[in-house]
Length: 359
Ligand SMILES: [Zn+2]
Image (cartoon, rainbow, N blue to C red; front, side):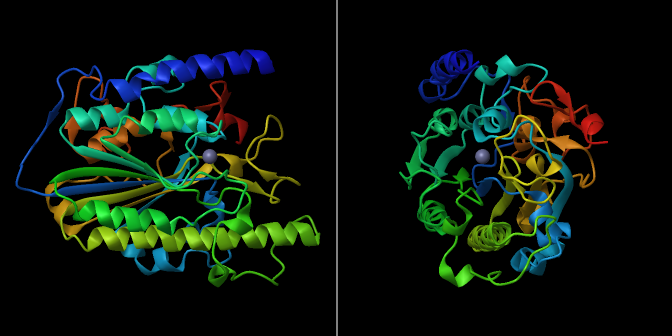
């Protein structure tokens, strides 16, 4: 099994190399309503290992998202979004390409970054994740299709690393650069283990409290507290990205989602996300939040289907819809922001019907 998986890993890696070489892809009939005088700035935050159930804006019992709550009336908060798998490569190679569970091999047939490039956006990939780690390199290969890519962190996620706010500083620089049409992807470390390394001391908010858990042990309390502190720092980070984008006062949105969830001793005596058995909802349930500027709202109508069932293997189509790019390959029935959106079965791990499994 390990041999087969590693052969597949390397052959996939080779096929994904094309994304850095062919920057515009092979899409047909690409079109975008293009007013070259209008500035458009779109930011996509890729979260990491953040379980929806731990966010205050999703009714977690702890106040882990005070800043997002303070602008809640400006946010579209999606309540029923899941990831197609429980590790970074498996979910993001689907989210950012034409690949989905119906056609997994389509992950080699076109990426959202290629589509944006062809539609004449300037694209940026800014990452706080190690670009050469086994866990991330397939994602890096897609990111390298951007016009510009920056890797700000060369350490492994388990180690002490620079905090995600480093991405905000880079974003601010990019927004001040020349250019009228930009899409910036920010690949954060989010709440990836080791949780206590994901936030500065000033965010050590839940420290001596005993959190709710069925597993009454100090080590459990410590991990849950550290995880919730990391969520609280993520709240700060997302809010900083929104405020930095808002300052430009142009047509813009900020889309945030997590690549998959995390189990932290709630439904199982376990923390992390790599798991082949005893699957829990926390591994799949993810936050997804959209902020739009006033200028964006004037020119583009979003159909808020906040409670619709959605899985992010279709994010390619949803992002294309948000930036108003059309192509033969873009399917509006797969965009949760579209009036034509249709719910479909959600098959995780290419084999398990999520809504039946967790009924
Ligand atoms: Zn991940």
